[in-house]
Length: 611
View 1 (cartoon, helix red, strand yellow):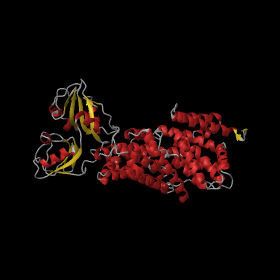
View 2 (cartoon, rainbow, N blue to C red; view 1 turned 45 degrees about the vertical axis):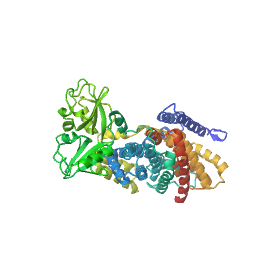
View 3 (spheres, rainbow, N blue to C red; view 1 turned 90 degrees about the horizontal axis):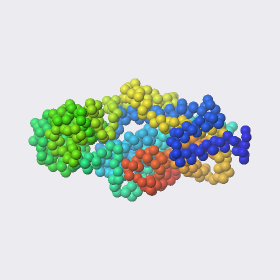
View 4 (cartoon, rainbow, N blue to C red; view 1 turned 120 degrees about the vertical axis):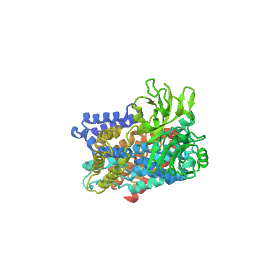
């Protein structure tokens, strides 16, 4: 093999490709997945990776596990697990800010042990938005602790994030190039990093408990989050306040009234839901009767609701006991729709159309030019060009909108929800996790068994499973895996490890591990957590062997620290919360920099204690 300056030519080419990858990921002239594909093709054309191995990354255990976790997460979401979660968090926190942030962050961190971090963040954005609306706690105070705990919670299991999923494949590959006399590297079990992940999560919670208010400010609202449309409707239509439950007592004058009669009362709030007996529904028809024990779901300012409840002898509940699921923003909410000239609604009032009775939609207001009709919206004949403000279940809105009598202009969740499949989804998910823990079946097979279970049980359809996969993430990972193999097989990793050993070979092992953790963190900031993992794991293994240490702790430090990006929107999790939370670059650095230092310290300390 040709050498230049003592370094094999193949190793030089691989290092050049590594440098090119880092430059392109930082420059962002090409999309990361295009850059990764370009690197893959170059590895094949140059012969650095044999043709029969070049595309093996696409069928590797790591990629299959990532795809499976994405599909399982989509199944849980489609079955309404997160809807139930939002209501539970409200009950647990009882409106107290610190308790709310703590509970939400802990749950988000726990879920991230089994789902990809961006997916967990995407699921918790509407949850946090709803909680913020209900309690008055600003999104800026909530989102960064949630994001940090999602990242920390990824270290709870070997499927919590892409680097940990990838680690066992890299360990298996490293066995092909180990020096003689070095023991074979065994794959890590499902919960091998659990003690480290728990410590990281606990540390983040303590950090925000002690310094959160000082670093995140007093909670000034800087922007509107996805699903947080209430502020817009309050400014535009005066539709403001929150949702409350009122129980009708035997002394109430509302007993025996219809919903329409109750709404016509002076000072009545928006009546959005009604529960009689075991039947609960949004947008109750005007002729629905109110009886003793009926529960009303009303919307308005707290003072208005309190006065209305007192005047009508209604019992007000401190929390949503009956309508928590119905009012979850992922299931129902407020929307706007334009009436086209061809609409059959033109010339008719809401009552004549039967919006609530036939379509399950409540009309809250009509915007006509400079005029806004609210109190008398249901008596106003609809005209072409009117902007109608609705409250409805999203599914009912989609069905009604298919007739083209109105065109919905508000973005809303259009996917079909299957709350009746909740227990199926939870049991199948738990079964997949337990199967992977058994040790008898590999993790990707166990997770894919869960995917098949959700498909057969009707939790997901096959097209929905395809749509839930983030193919960009899959391509980046699958294309960069061979680069990690080339780092090892070409001798590039051994060469760099040898150079580092000459300079730092006499330092204590914990200091050497800290250096590895810092380098991995910096690489993760520049070339993504997957790129940092495939480059640094072979190097860390060679460095550990040169230093006479066990390679597994070094490799685990790399896999954990590759996700230690708490200061840059290049991290998908931070990019998702930066806008809704109103975080500027300086805010991310101010909060994330000390957290990143703490992260490295905890990882190195705990890896040495556990291993």
